[in-house]
Image 1 (cartoon, rainbow, N blue to C red):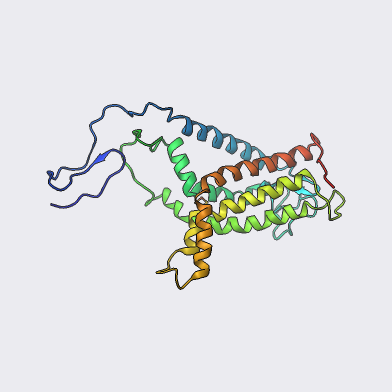
Image 2 (cartoon, helix red, strand yellow):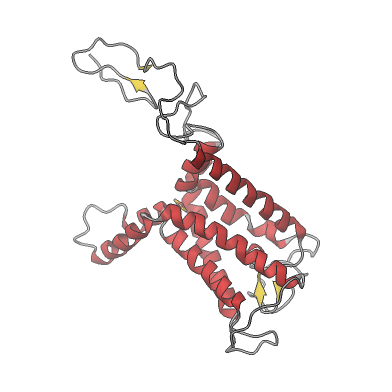
Length: 276
Ligand code: FES
């Protein structure tokens, strides 16, 4: 008798001593036997991610109100346009002012989050209902996996991470520039400085807790005993990795909040709270 590889949700396979039937789903007519509110989490995920997509799309195309001395919105940094204001990250390339600089750079953070192992779980469940929750049947008949286009592109995650690490350096630089006042004098601090610092910190925690980062740091080794430094780094990243989902959400919120704060300053809706 040949062993049959396990199949996805609800699949029943033949085992030792059983007839060799083709794998089949358990004969349960109900979509789920769960009685708790299993739909709350996928619903919250849909609402939150959809709200972020709508907000970030609007802001990316707005091409305005992204700078208020000395702060720049994380959506627009590095500012790759001739229309940039202020003294921000050195401009390596400048496109025409009518193209929003956010459009050049969003591909990296968007690519990271779209291919993130945690977000895949979140949006496969909440948007594609594949499956919507544990022990809840999915509406799809077939599972084609990530071994063919378009989901094959999920394997580019590691490269999106490399790009995101560069962005983290730039956003950290922006947060340090926040220790200036409106005239460019160093040694000052405002609420905006804290907002940008918190955002940069959360983005580092999100990137460093990444599953690919954990593999980059500790993968492809036959033993750790000959690589004590990599073992230490892997242990640290593994600790962060256990909180990756939390960092994924917190950093998503912090990016939106940092952008909103700069937007409100730039439009004159609020004034920055200066500590010193
Ligand atoms: S797994 Fe989430 S960023 Fe890499």
